[in-house]
Image (cartoon, rainbow over all chains, first blue to last red; front, side, top):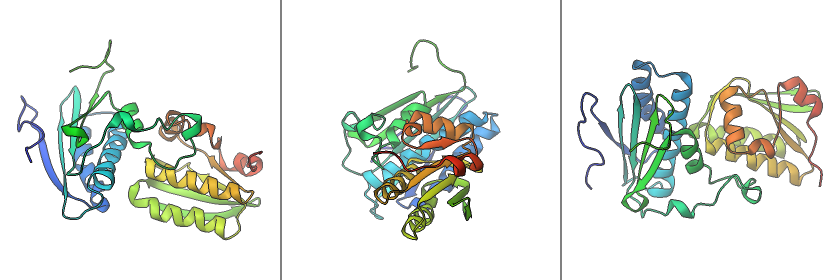
Length: 152
Length: 115
């Protein structure tokens, strides 16, 4: 499987980790990313948003992508720069169509216990894009709100 | 995450202390559903010291809400801080749950939904 990100990009290189499909590994993975945010002085709102989106992405990759198959791995790559945080998460599952996920905020879906992960990722990050047939998600959080839509 | 349960004003109060992340969901499920199966009719989730919540934990709270409702009971939320309040608004779960500013108000006002 090709690596998700380029290995370096300017002064802020990508860090890539290959994670086992185990939910108990998620806090450790989050700590690595969140420590990088703290080191660059991101505030609590950014910290919370990135933690939430990363948690949802990793849980989705393990539960729905890899179906908790311990022989499969999740690739997490991140790059924390002063102006933006990039995160990519890729699983080894069949992929999916993110457009096919029902909106969990509608009245008829409000009582469903599942299906809020993607909506939370989209709500708390500035950009969320799926590729590789739905196997990989690339999320971006900017330090400053963007004017006029998403950046590339 | 730690879960602290107590009885207050006829309600079972379940305080979630720390992060309600995916690793905490099993314990949260056990606490909430266990309380309902144990006969609690009015359940208050005290979120005053909850610093994080994920969709998995939200799902557990919804499951508890539905289970309580089938038994004529209620699950209410109390004291969410800014980030949690924002999550509840973003997900529109503040339209499903009664959300109170603090536990005392929740204990006083938590009632089973009509209909």
